[in-house]
Image 1 (tube, helix red, strand yellow):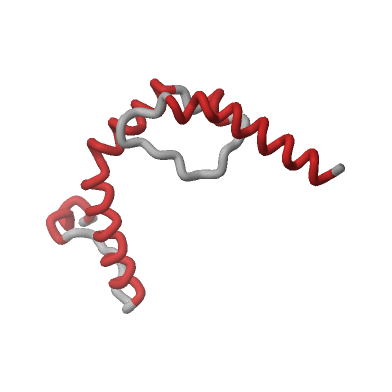
Image 2 (cartoon, one colour):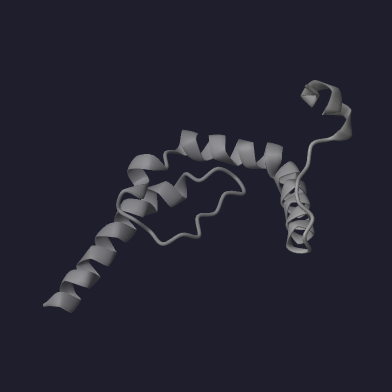
Length: 93
C-alpha cells in the first residue's frame, strides 16, 4: 500500500510539472527534483525573468566567486581585512 501511494504521488507530481517543462524559456533547464508546488511558482514569466538575470549577470557572478575564493585563501594564510590607506584621514581622531 505504501509503495502504491509513493508511485501515485510520483505520477501526480510528474503530471503537474509536465505543462511547466513544455513552456520553459529557450536555454532553461530544470534539474531539481519535481515538486508539486513548482508549477504554481515557476510560471513562464518568472522563469524568463530568472533566465534574463542569469544571462546578464552570470559572467560577473563567476568572476566574483573566483575573487571570493582567492580572498578566502588569503584569510586562510593569516591575512585579515584592513582599511584601505586612502581612508586613514577619515578615521583619524
